[in-house]
Length: 237
Image 1 (cartoon, rainbow, N blue to C red):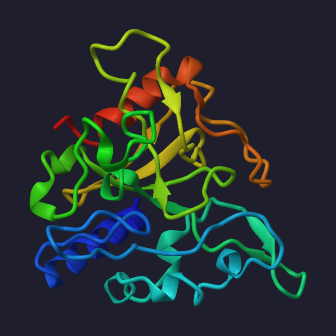
Image 2 (cartoon, rainbow, N blue to C red):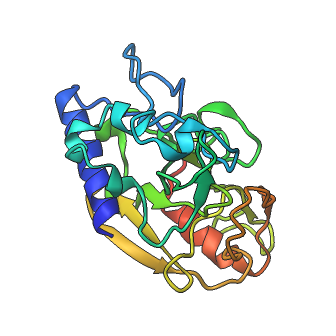
């Protein structure tokens, strides 16, 4: 919870310095008016031996636009319960450097409508802090499952997970973590953090530390969990 809270504070401090413009969840995030936005963190994580982004905090994390607002502390983007290990360029085991991702609501939002439509389709994406409709129910950061995490963004599908949608339409695009006895840490746009306990089994597969877990799958008995995230991802335009 503390890590997520610190990330959200750094997120807000950055926007305070740049006229309310928010860092993006990914490269080429939509502009804030005419102003370009920068990715909150670069680097694609996997289990490929020698991938510098996996193990060297100086490769991407220390270059984050939020770095000074993070107190130059790389530990806040890594959950202590994430045991992912990788091989470095000397073929030695090293801990992977990041477990936290940012909601795609602050990027292109292409999976909010479940079809990969850029700019969120019928759902809002946010480029400035003042645009956020319901800060206390808008996820910024969360811990991502170690076999799901790749780029800096986390996809939540809202389509099929609305109160008016019938059952069994929900999809899990990216998998949240379940490090804490089947729970995941989230931080929100109003600055608060919480650990949420998952109810279904589909959303909390055991970690294999291979990166081969299928993504974008039916939620099954975890539909209620997807709906919880969808309610806290964004709102309709």
